[in-house]
Length: 403
Image (tube, rainbow, N blue to C red):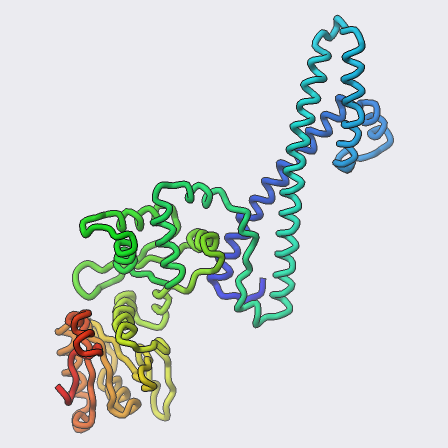
């Protein structure tokens, strides 16, 4: 398949393709079983004809199924008539019953063949569609990178059919759709959405049970972050390949990228989660997220903010800081670069009050004489809430020199 397809698309499609190959193999197995049965019936009712074909060197497996069916149809009525008119032989008193059972089996075989012929046509159409998609991928690389190959969704895998019949399918399918449509990965946020959508009580464990069930089924996987705002770190949920396949069957489209995919742009799981929390508040306040962690080359240094956002046609550069040791980073250079690139407009999210105090101390030490020209906006994530945002219209809990 074309290498321009992104990993998620490849994974989802490969899993679907494996499912359809299995279904095709099962259908072909049933087809071959039916063909062997018809060949056996032919041996009963037209043994001379079959013997003649065999002695002439004809490969019996290459005789068209339509030919076998035609021969059986011609001979069964003749044999039944002979059985009805001829006296029953003592050597075989059940001859008439034998041919009657044979005739009934043949009728059943005809029904089976009709079903298998329809299934075979469907599989042939699927193979043709797949071949057309592969040819399209090879001929148009750009288009292939944007197009998700979607198979015939009328062929449902067994695991999906069984899942749709389960008691809590509605809750679980809602959760998969939520994650697939939004990329939401933080378990607390996922559970909050489940509780709100299904109007569950505060003490209900149904949201937790829904997530556990999806984990047990293998539709999602969880990761634990290292650190957090307060208390035990929450889990991070992501759709597995099986979950992506289930989402595709639910919606007919591929899932969006997980929000936690931004980790590749940030330092740790905990820092990623903090960036997502900052992003939530920025979006609530009407900011548009333009980019995560760009590396901007300047004349004398590389400026690498955690986020670039925009509101009212104004672009802001954001740093997100945890309460943790910074190791051997050159913190003075970091804040001086931030100051010079943004002309003193510094926007910073802090994990809590302790982190805020540390940042203020670092910025004061780094800027020295330039500090008077700095406009520093800080959002303390442990203090902001919906009420504060509603009252102020923004997320900044501390502003220098205005406050």
